[in-house]
Image (cartoon, rainbow, N blue to C red; front, side, top):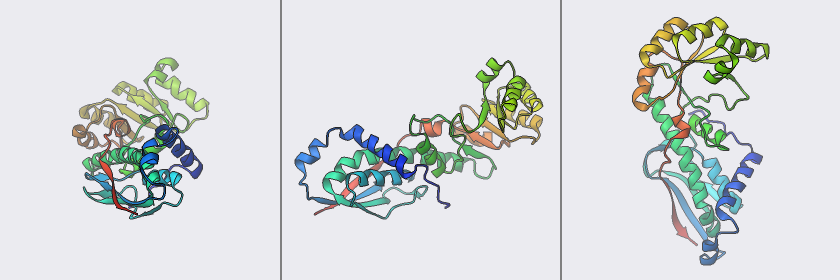
Length: 284
């Protein structure tokens, strides 16, 4: 497995961890601070309670370390690894109060990101052998985009544009305001933007986008028979992406039409969290 670059630098990660812990801790964990002796230490195991693809452990480790700088970790499963139910994905030893206070925040992020990675992996598996690639989208939780897209990559997807700033995608509303596909593409070219992707809902729009010189086409909400028709018109001249309402039961048929990419908003918008537990093994 090729390591997936973690998207947050140390400064950004520290800012995220501080904000996440502040949301839960507020003025302090009154339960742990009242019940647990300050010198008590714990050995704990983060374990998978169902099959999954792991994602988010660097964030979890940073969360625990923020409350106990001397915490130690072992048996760290690499993000992107597929594990079975019962697998240990992280072993932790540190101050009891700190581990208890950080537990929920750490689990929340790993469960959420691993849920994205697990759903993504299922879609990637479903189209194996077709030559198509799964893409994520901008349908992410605000302020979690980098981590959401990282989790999708852990599951085997390719990342689409990160935001509005790093790629031109002319969609239906842009076309409506600009006046036509040709006018929108020409305006993007005049502004010096390259490459230019155009969203097409109809075969007529496919022809217009090709004539206008689009560099790639997003074929939106087209059923497989229409995708095949569009691909015959395109004839390999530009890369193609199918999008809109993709489900597990339809993704294989879409991939088999011959499209290059399939973008799926559900990966980051609707993936359920997986079940991960933090089990305490020893108290000293």
